[in-house]
Image (cartoon, rainbow, N blue to C red):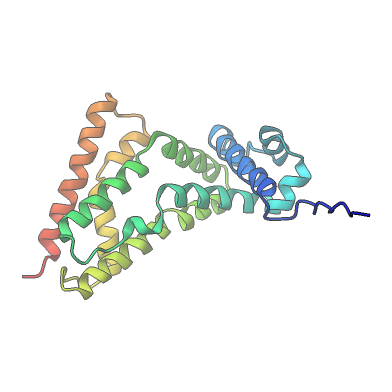
Length: 216
């Protein structure tokens, strides 16, 4: 008599489980931007994702962890580590311009600026730890990747930088200029001209940086 094989139950990490996790993250991203951290409940996330509240907690534990994963997921999707890859055969100006343009487009993206505004709202209401989470997963991580890239360029003799950590911060500031703050305050009159100016600001920032740190 033949035996009918038994189907194994869906376990953690299997496709259906990962689909639920992805749905929760997408729902949380949308709600955090729309309602800020304080205005987003785990019940609302569960409803938006079409899962139970228990499923949300089983994946993420609590709202702080969920928020951190939302920020980490968003940033790693948009700014993977290989974006800051040093290519030995590439001209250092081309390397820095490529990274600068990618970096500022993301920082000044309308949806990302919406996230910044939501977090600032929570900070204003006395919840600075949420701003700290965003800082750690976003700017601090980006600074570390930029620092690593610049150190590799120094090691290959492409740049002469006495303090790589400080230089990474200088480059990030130069390529953004006032463009992020203008978008934060809604002071870009025309999206098309803003995009052109954004790219030119990034290129000019790289040019100024190289004037200071190219080997002489």
